[in-house]
Amino acid sequence: MPVLRMRQAANFLAAALCLVVLAPLRANASISLLVEEPFGTFGAFNPTGHAAIYLSNVCADAPTRLRVCHGGEMGVVVSRYHRVDGYDWVAIPLVPYLYAVENLDDVPESATPELEKELRDRYRREHLLNLAPSKADGSAPGGEWIQLVGSSYDRRIFGFQLDTTPEQDAAIIAKLNDSRNHGQFNLFYRNCADFARSILRTTYPGSIPRNAMADFWLTTPKHLARSVTKFGAKKPEVGFEVFQIPQVPGSIPRSRRIDGIGESLVRSKKYIVPLAFLSPTTAASLVAAYVGTGRFKMPKEAPLMEALEQKDAPVGIVVTGKLELPLTPSPVADAKMCSVQEPATLLQAGAQ
Image (cartoon, rainbow, N blue to C red; front, side, top):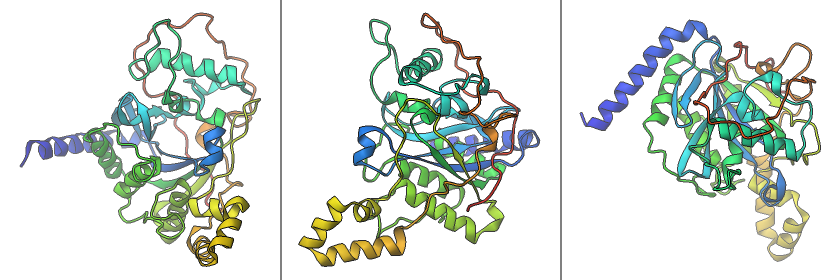
Protein backbone atom coordinates (compact mmCIF):
# COMPACT_ATOMS: atom_id res chain seq x y z
CA MET A 1 0.00 0.00 0.00
CA PRO A 2 1.42 3.46 -0.86
CA VAL A 3 2.69 5.52 2.05
CA LEU A 4 0.05 8.24 1.50
CA ARG A 5 -2.79 5.73 1.66
CA MET A 6 -1.34 4.17 4.79
CA ARG A 7 -1.16 7.60 6.43
CA GLN A 8 -4.73 8.39 5.39
CA ALA A 9 -5.96 5.08 6.77
CA ALA A 10 -4.11 5.66 10.04
CA ASN A 11 -5.58 9.12 10.41
CA PHE A 12 -9.08 7.82 9.72
CA LEU A 13 -8.74 5.02 12.26
CA ALA A 14 -7.34 7.38 14.89
CA ALA A 15 -10.19 9.85 14.36
CA ALA A 16 -12.77 7.06 14.40
CA LEU A 17 -11.38 5.61 17.65
CA CYS A 18 -11.38 9.04 19.29
CA LEU A 19 -14.95 9.66 18.18
CA VAL A 20 -16.13 6.31 19.49
CA VAL A 21 -14.48 6.92 22.87
CA LEU A 22 -15.85 10.43 23.21
CA ALA A 23 -19.24 9.89 21.56
CA PRO A 24 -21.10 9.58 24.89
CA LEU A 25 -19.94 13.11 25.74
CA ARG A 26 -21.57 14.54 22.65
CA ALA A 27 -25.08 13.61 21.54
CA ASN A 28 -26.85 14.59 18.33
CA ALA A 29 -23.74 15.30 16.26
CA SER A 30 -24.50 17.04 13.00
CA ILE A 31 -23.25 18.72 9.86
CA SER A 32 -24.88 22.01 8.91
CA LEU A 33 -24.71 23.90 5.66
CA LEU A 34 -24.47 27.61 6.49
CA VAL A 35 -25.85 29.85 3.75
CA GLU A 36 -24.90 33.46 4.38
CA GLU A 37 -26.50 36.51 2.82
CA PRO A 38 -24.40 38.81 0.59
CA PHE A 39 -23.36 42.23 1.87
CA GLY A 40 -21.39 45.27 0.83
CA THR A 41 -20.39 46.42 -2.63
CA PHE A 42 -19.40 42.97 -3.85
CA GLY A 43 -22.70 41.56 -2.59
CA ALA A 44 -24.57 44.06 -4.75
CA PHE A 45 -22.93 42.65 -7.88
CA ASN A 46 -22.78 39.02 -6.75
CA PRO A 47 -25.98 38.12 -4.86
CA THR A 48 -25.11 34.44 -4.36
CA GLY A 49 -23.72 34.94 -0.82
CA HIS A 50 -21.33 32.62 1.01
CA ALA A 51 -21.42 28.93 1.99
CA ALA A 52 -19.69 27.26 4.93
CA ILE A 53 -19.94 24.01 6.88
CA TYR A 54 -20.58 23.82 10.62
CA LEU A 55 -19.54 20.55 12.29
CA SER A 56 -20.93 20.23 15.81
CA ASN A 57 -18.67 17.35 16.88
CA VAL A 58 -15.45 18.37 15.08
CA CYS A 59 -13.03 20.87 16.61
CA ALA A 60 -9.48 22.02 15.84
CA ASP A 61 -6.09 22.24 17.49
CA ALA A 62 -5.16 24.87 14.91
CA PRO A 63 -7.05 26.59 12.08
CA THR A 64 -5.86 23.93 9.64
CA ARG A 65 -5.88 20.77 11.79
CA LEU A 66 -9.11 19.08 12.86
CA ARG A 67 -9.87 16.67 15.69
CA VAL A 68 -12.87 15.33 17.56
CA CYS A 69 -14.43 17.72 20.08
CA HIS A 70 -13.97 17.24 23.81
CA GLY A 71 -16.76 17.69 26.32
CA GLY A 72 -18.22 21.20 26.27
CA GLU A 73 -16.75 22.29 22.93
CA MET A 74 -19.15 23.58 20.30
CA GLY A 75 -17.47 22.57 17.05
CA VAL A 76 -16.02 24.54 14.15
CA VAL A 77 -17.07 26.30 10.96
CA VAL A 78 -14.99 25.28 7.94
CA SER A 79 -14.98 27.02 4.59
CA ARG A 80 -12.89 27.75 1.50
CA TYR A 81 -11.35 31.19 1.34
CA HIS A 82 -9.45 33.28 -1.18
CA ARG A 83 -6.01 34.58 -0.24
CA VAL A 84 -5.86 33.64 3.44
CA ASP A 85 -2.14 32.89 3.89
CA GLY A 86 -2.21 30.52 0.92
CA TYR A 87 -4.62 28.01 2.49
CA ASP A 88 -7.60 26.46 0.76
CA TRP A 89 -9.71 25.95 3.90
CA VAL A 90 -9.64 27.26 7.44
CA ALA A 91 -11.55 26.09 10.53
CA ILE A 92 -12.71 28.56 13.19
CA PRO A 93 -14.66 27.78 16.41
CA LEU A 94 -18.37 28.53 16.12
CA VAL A 95 -18.70 31.51 18.49
CA PRO A 96 -15.62 33.41 17.21
CA TYR A 97 -16.67 32.71 13.63
CA LEU A 98 -20.00 34.38 14.27
CA TYR A 99 -19.07 37.12 16.75
CA ALA A 100 -15.25 37.47 16.99
CA VAL A 101 -15.39 36.73 20.73
CA GLU A 102 -14.81 33.48 22.60
CA ASN A 103 -17.79 33.45 24.95
CA LEU A 104 -21.46 34.07 24.34
CA ASP A 105 -21.58 36.40 27.35
CA ASP A 106 -19.31 38.81 25.46
CA VAL A 107 -21.52 39.17 22.38
CA PRO A 108 -22.63 42.84 22.19
CA GLU A 109 -26.27 43.87 22.05
CA SER A 110 -25.57 45.95 18.95
CA ALA A 111 -22.54 46.67 16.81
CA THR A 112 -20.95 49.55 14.94
CA PRO A 113 -18.34 49.26 12.18
CA GLU A 114 -15.73 50.45 14.68
CA LEU A 115 -16.66 47.81 17.26
CA GLU A 116 -16.68 45.08 14.61
CA LYS A 117 -13.20 46.10 13.48
CA GLU A 118 -11.86 46.18 17.05
CA LEU A 119 -13.31 42.77 17.97
CA ARG A 120 -11.89 41.16 14.85
CA ASP A 121 -8.45 42.64 15.39
CA ARG A 122 -8.39 41.58 19.05
CA TYR A 123 -9.24 37.98 18.13
CA ARG A 124 -6.65 38.07 15.32
CA ARG A 125 -3.93 39.21 17.73
CA GLU A 126 -4.79 36.47 20.20
CA HIS A 127 -5.31 33.54 17.81
CA LEU A 128 -4.65 34.25 14.13
CA LEU A 129 -1.27 35.98 13.90
CA ASN A 130 0.12 33.08 11.88
CA LEU A 131 -2.59 33.57 9.27
CA ALA A 132 -2.77 37.37 9.39
CA PRO A 133 0.40 38.93 10.85
CA SER A 134 0.39 42.58 11.85
CA LYS A 135 1.90 45.27 9.68
CA ALA A 136 5.29 46.73 10.54
CA ASP A 137 3.61 49.43 12.61
CA GLY A 138 1.62 46.83 14.59
CA SER A 139 -1.73 47.59 12.96
CA ALA A 140 -4.11 45.06 11.42
CA PRO A 141 -3.33 43.96 7.86
CA GLY A 142 -5.70 44.27 4.97
CA GLY A 143 -6.99 41.26 3.09
CA GLU A 144 -9.68 38.65 3.41
CA TRP A 145 -8.76 37.30 6.85
CA ILE A 146 -11.68 39.36 8.22
CA GLN A 147 -14.04 36.74 6.77
CA LEU A 148 -12.76 34.25 9.35
CA VAL A 149 -14.41 35.91 12.36
CA GLY A 150 -17.43 38.07 13.10
CA SER A 151 -19.63 36.93 10.23
CA SER A 152 -22.89 37.71 12.05
CA TYR A 153 -22.08 41.40 12.24
CA ASP A 154 -22.24 41.59 8.45
CA ARG A 155 -25.06 39.22 7.49
CA ARG A 156 -27.88 36.91 8.40
CA ILE A 157 -27.15 33.19 8.16
CA PHE A 158 -29.45 30.25 7.41
CA GLY A 159 -28.58 26.72 8.54
CA PHE A 160 -29.56 23.35 7.02
CA GLN A 161 -28.66 20.50 9.36
CA LEU A 162 -28.25 16.75 8.92
CA ASP A 163 -27.34 14.23 11.61
CA THR A 164 -23.92 12.59 11.51
CA THR A 165 -22.45 9.41 12.97
CA PRO A 166 -18.99 9.07 14.56
CA GLU A 167 -17.83 7.32 11.39
CA GLN A 168 -19.03 10.18 9.18
CA ASP A 169 -17.30 12.76 11.39
CA ALA A 170 -14.11 10.69 11.29
CA ALA A 171 -14.27 10.59 7.49
CA ILE A 172 -14.54 14.40 7.32
CA ILE A 173 -11.61 14.84 9.71
CA ALA A 174 -9.44 12.43 7.70
CA LYS A 175 -10.44 14.01 4.37
CA LEU A 176 -9.52 17.53 5.41
CA ASN A 177 -6.44 16.71 7.48
CA ASP A 178 -5.03 14.68 4.58
CA SER A 179 -5.90 17.28 1.95
CA ARG A 180 -3.21 19.39 0.32
CA ASN A 181 -4.81 22.58 1.71
CA HIS A 182 -3.13 24.95 -0.69
CA GLY A 183 -5.21 27.78 -2.12
CA GLN A 184 -7.46 26.55 -4.93
CA PHE A 185 -10.15 29.22 -4.99
CA ASN A 186 -11.82 29.90 -8.31
CA LEU A 187 -15.04 31.89 -8.44
CA PHE A 188 -16.57 29.61 -11.06
CA TYR A 189 -15.53 26.04 -10.26
CA ARG A 190 -13.68 26.02 -6.91
CA ASN A 191 -15.68 28.48 -4.86
CA CYS A 192 -16.93 28.27 -1.28
CA ALA A 193 -20.08 26.42 -2.38
CA ASP A 194 -18.03 23.79 -4.25
CA PHE A 195 -16.05 23.16 -1.05
CA ALA A 196 -19.23 22.82 1.02
CA ARG A 197 -20.69 20.48 -1.61
CA SER A 198 -17.62 18.22 -1.42
CA ILE A 199 -17.92 17.91 2.38
CA LEU A 200 -21.66 17.22 2.19
CA ARG A 201 -21.09 14.55 -0.46
CA THR A 202 -18.38 12.96 1.70
CA THR A 203 -20.99 12.63 4.45
CA TYR A 204 -23.95 11.75 2.21
CA PRO A 205 -22.72 10.60 -1.24
CA GLY A 206 -24.91 11.67 -4.13
CA SER A 207 -26.88 14.15 -2.04
CA ILE A 208 -25.92 17.33 -3.92
CA PRO A 209 -26.09 17.29 -7.74
CA ARG A 210 -25.08 20.32 -9.78
CA ASN A 211 -27.82 22.64 -11.04
CA ALA A 212 -27.08 22.53 -14.76
CA MET A 213 -30.10 24.58 -15.76
CA ALA A 214 -30.73 27.44 -13.36
CA ASP A 215 -27.10 28.05 -12.32
CA PHE A 216 -25.30 27.14 -15.57
CA TRP A 217 -23.41 24.18 -14.07
CA LEU A 218 -21.99 26.38 -11.32
CA THR A 219 -22.43 25.62 -7.62
CA THR A 220 -24.13 28.33 -5.57
CA PRO A 221 -25.05 28.47 -1.86
CA LYS A 222 -28.78 28.67 -2.60
CA HIS A 223 -28.61 25.61 -4.85
CA LEU A 224 -26.94 23.71 -2.01
CA ALA A 225 -29.71 24.79 0.37
CA ARG A 226 -32.36 23.59 -2.06
CA SER A 227 -30.58 20.26 -2.60
CA VAL A 228 -30.06 19.59 1.13
CA THR A 229 -33.72 20.40 1.78
CA LYS A 230 -34.88 17.99 -0.94
CA PHE A 231 -32.49 15.31 0.33
CA GLY A 232 -33.78 15.73 3.88
CA ALA A 233 -37.38 15.45 2.71
CA LYS A 234 -36.62 12.17 0.92
CA LYS A 235 -34.57 10.75 3.82
CA PRO A 236 -36.35 11.39 7.13
CA GLU A 237 -33.79 9.25 8.95
CA VAL A 238 -31.10 11.92 8.44
CA GLY A 239 -32.84 14.26 10.89
CA PHE A 240 -33.05 17.29 8.61
CA GLU A 241 -33.79 20.59 10.35
CA VAL A 242 -33.32 24.28 9.65
CA PHE A 243 -32.36 27.31 11.72
CA GLN A 244 -31.26 30.89 11.31
CA ILE A 245 -28.70 33.16 12.96
CA PRO A 246 -29.78 36.82 12.79
CA GLN A 247 -27.45 39.65 11.87
CA VAL A 248 -26.42 41.51 15.01
CA PRO A 249 -28.41 44.76 15.31
CA GLY A 250 -26.61 48.07 14.96
CA SER A 251 -25.40 50.65 12.47
CA ILE A 252 -23.67 48.15 10.17
CA PRO A 253 -25.61 48.00 6.85
CA ARG A 254 -28.03 45.07 6.58
CA SER A 255 -27.23 42.14 4.32
CA ARG A 256 -29.17 41.43 1.13
CA ARG A 257 -31.33 38.53 -0.01
CA ILE A 258 -29.63 35.46 -1.48
CA ASP A 259 -30.19 34.65 -5.16
CA GLY A 260 -28.98 31.97 -7.52
CA ILE A 261 -27.38 32.94 -10.83
CA GLY A 262 -30.43 32.38 -13.02
CA GLU A 263 -32.67 33.86 -10.35
CA SER A 264 -30.65 37.07 -10.17
CA LEU A 265 -31.00 37.50 -13.94
CA VAL A 266 -34.71 36.73 -14.03
CA ARG A 267 -35.56 38.99 -11.11
CA SER A 268 -33.54 41.95 -12.39
CA LYS A 269 -35.24 44.13 -14.99
CA LYS A 270 -31.91 45.60 -16.08
CA TYR A 271 -30.87 42.12 -17.26
CA ILE A 272 -34.04 40.29 -18.29
CA VAL A 273 -35.68 43.12 -20.26
CA PRO A 274 -32.74 43.75 -22.64
CA LEU A 275 -32.24 39.99 -22.97
CA ALA A 276 -35.91 39.48 -23.87
CA PHE A 277 -35.60 42.20 -26.50
CA LEU A 278 -32.39 40.85 -28.03
CA SER A 279 -33.19 37.14 -27.73
CA PRO A 280 -36.73 36.23 -26.64
CA THR A 281 -35.95 32.52 -26.89
CA THR A 282 -32.97 32.78 -24.56
CA ALA A 283 -34.95 34.85 -22.07
CA ALA A 284 -37.84 32.38 -22.13
CA SER A 285 -35.46 29.45 -21.61
CA LEU A 286 -33.84 31.22 -18.67
CA VAL A 287 -37.21 31.87 -17.04
CA ALA A 288 -38.26 28.25 -17.61
CA ALA A 289 -35.01 26.96 -16.07
CA TYR A 290 -35.46 29.16 -13.02
CA VAL A 291 -39.11 28.18 -12.54
CA GLY A 292 -38.34 24.50 -13.09
CA THR A 293 -35.16 23.99 -11.10
CA GLY A 294 -34.06 27.23 -9.47
CA ARG A 295 -36.87 28.42 -7.23
CA PHE A 296 -36.32 28.05 -3.53
CA LYS A 297 -37.59 30.11 -0.60
CA MET A 298 -35.12 30.67 2.19
CA PRO A 299 -36.58 29.68 5.60
CA LYS A 300 -36.95 33.18 7.02
CA GLU A 301 -39.33 31.92 9.71
CA ALA A 302 -36.95 29.19 10.88
CA PRO A 303 -36.16 29.00 14.61
CA LEU A 304 -33.03 30.52 16.03
CA MET A 305 -29.98 28.31 16.47
CA GLU A 306 -30.54 26.77 19.88
CA ALA A 307 -26.84 26.28 20.60
CA LEU A 308 -26.45 30.07 20.68
CA GLU A 309 -29.45 30.91 22.84
CA GLN A 310 -29.03 32.27 26.33
CA LYS A 311 -31.66 32.00 29.05
CA ASP A 312 -33.65 35.11 28.25
CA ALA A 313 -32.98 35.97 24.60
CA PRO A 314 -31.00 34.84 21.56
CA VAL A 315 -27.43 35.95 21.03
CA GLY A 316 -27.21 39.27 19.19
CA ILE A 317 -30.34 40.63 20.88
CA VAL A 318 -29.58 40.20 24.57
CA VAL A 319 -27.86 42.93 26.60
CA THR A 320 -24.72 41.48 28.19
CA GLY A 321 -22.85 44.50 29.54
CA LYS A 322 -19.68 42.42 29.95
CA LEU A 323 -17.69 43.43 26.90
CA GLU A 324 -14.53 45.39 27.63
CA LEU A 325 -12.20 46.20 24.76
CA PRO A 326 -8.46 46.47 25.49
CA LEU A 327 -6.95 49.95 25.34
CA THR A 328 -3.71 48.51 23.98
CA PRO A 329 -3.12 45.48 21.73
CA SER A 330 -3.25 42.18 23.59
CA PRO A 331 -0.07 40.07 23.74
CA VAL A 332 0.12 36.96 21.61
CA ALA A 333 -1.67 34.08 23.31
CA ASP A 334 -1.46 30.35 22.78
CA ALA A 335 -3.92 29.00 20.25
CA LYS A 336 -7.26 27.94 21.70
CA MET A 337 -9.21 26.78 18.72
CA CYS A 338 -12.46 25.60 20.32
CA SER A 339 -14.62 27.72 22.58
CA VAL A 340 -15.65 25.91 25.76
CA GLN A 341 -19.39 26.12 26.33
CA GLU A 342 -21.99 23.75 27.64
CA PRO A 343 -23.14 21.43 24.83
CA ALA A 344 -26.67 22.04 23.53
CA THR A 345 -28.99 20.55 20.98
CA LEU A 346 -28.33 22.34 17.70
CA LEU A 347 -31.80 22.94 16.34
CA GLN A 348 -35.43 23.10 17.41
CA ALA A 349 -37.63 22.63 14.37
CA GLY A 350 -37.64 21.30 10.80
CA ALA A 351 -37.95 23.05 7.48
CA GLN A 352 -40.94 25.33 6.99
